[in-house]
Image (tube, rainbow, N blue to C red; front, side, top):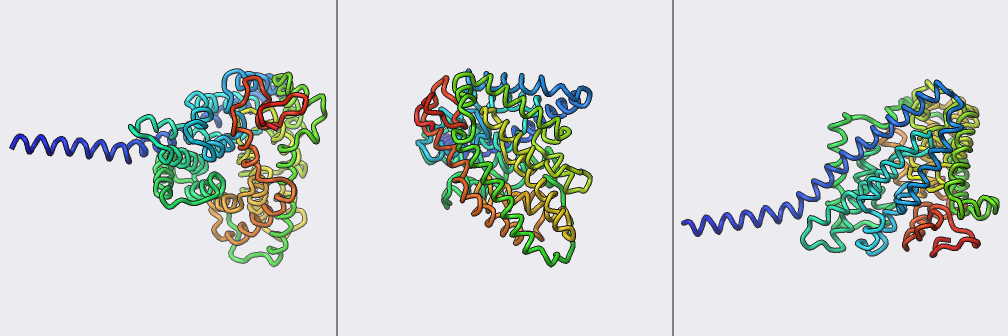
Length: 454
């Protein structure tokens, strides 16, 4: 009897360990991703609130603070946290397209996870035009990747599933868009769909989403728009025009980021290669000037401006999208940790506001929604992800066909200017970056060659 009980106890223990290794570790990682995504968002919002508070009291303060913050962020990133530059999505793609363990140990470490949060928080204190959604993708992937340590026999498949699920769960929790998290993983991160990975992916997104909902409540990122029961007669024309304009704007933005050697003057390229901290300070000055000229609307991610336009309580200049693009490029060129999702949506909202001058009979929120999905699709060249994200953000199921058409046309127009941005940037992380090399986010010049970074 005792022997049977011991045997049963041993069998139960083994079964419990097996279940823990198969599911428990993964579920714990997904919970952590949800928690970090929520509190990271609150940290960024608090930091931006501080910046706006002091800017309101001292309107010229950004001329000093923003360049100083830029210099500090680049110094920290270059000296201690290589691999945390930019949005973080190119790093995740590079890991998924490389031997996972080797690339993950370089680009998804706990050190990079902490630095991504810390340095992007410092950047938002300076009013930089950055989003938190891209960094949350890398943070989620890093959290899940490091959970592999708890698997006694971790392998390539487990590591890949952890990275993919962590990245998708990070995006889902950041935007509260579970469908977009799934589509993002398929369309952007892997460009394929694995039946074996689908259950793991969806489970991680669900768990992280439940955590985010438990802390933030059930909400839509930009609220709910009301476009009425009857669509305007010029909707088809508006879709095509909006898609072409945002496609050109997004394509030009991608071209500028991927071809810096063709438009940045040689002295500035040399400055970036030899004195990156000084180059960052100069970019910070450009961002500060753009912010002052725009009345402060180009600082930060642009979430408040986009939501204000959708709700009809914000009135922006027709030059807002162009000034926001300048600020966004200035924020990205130095290699400061920060994403481009939210700023892209804000720029798209600005284009929608401008187009309303020509399509006066159309509801403004409808045009803004179309322009947001158009510009985001143009920048990412992932049209399905773009229209699913915007649809979930605005609860705009009535506009599904219009959003889909805008995203597809805009993405195709953008591709005439540049290849997919994240994929192109991910190639620069395929090999280790030298300690004092220029940021992989900006190609090296011939005068300052880097290991396969050009």
